[in-house]
Image (tube, rainbow, N blue to C red):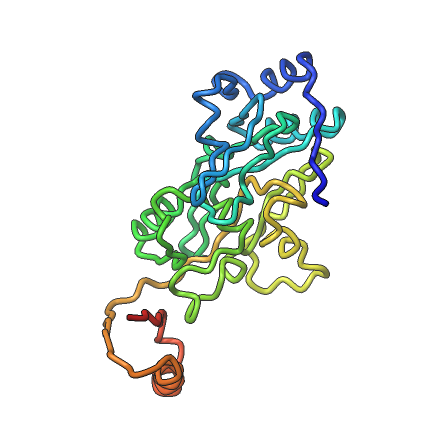
Length: 266
């Protein structure tokens, strides 16, 4: 027997409070405007909410979350809405709101001495790659949706991408975070330290948590020297086992110079 989720409708006065907290141009309440935020990228699942909020500052995100906490309203954080698991879609009972990070889109600072870039959660991944390239650096996270996915979503899902072999998942690329917690308080861990042994590494709690523990609003990311040369090989193999063996051989000879390796079946 499957239980049906029944949520409470959001009171009109709370809706108005949330609109005010989102600031000018920060609230969408027309069904046609809301629809793109409620539709799953892959399977077309459609949720329903009375309101999509697009705050422009961390303080506004905090105020929105504080109001929702007081009123017992569910919050669905959303980045570029390019995920394939439905994790960014709301339920269909009009009991939640979507908080989109799309207008938190500033690159706050670039530090070529420490090789870091500090960005807000709504910055599109491609824009970070371009900004890094502009200072002769590399931000190595790369995936098919990089022209529309946002870094906050990449962090919240611990995205992997095609260069995990050399640079690791998103978890390995984050030095610091700024997060709005479920009570509306702000945890500021925007540090760019490489050697930080001062107790618990709290940022790791939020990376991969998919917005369940807080809304990532900004991050300090690692940059790398830009490679001066690269080679790509397309190799025919008789089996997946042969492909794994080839990868082992390449890593034994080349070490971390192998940045990507993908098996493509017939």
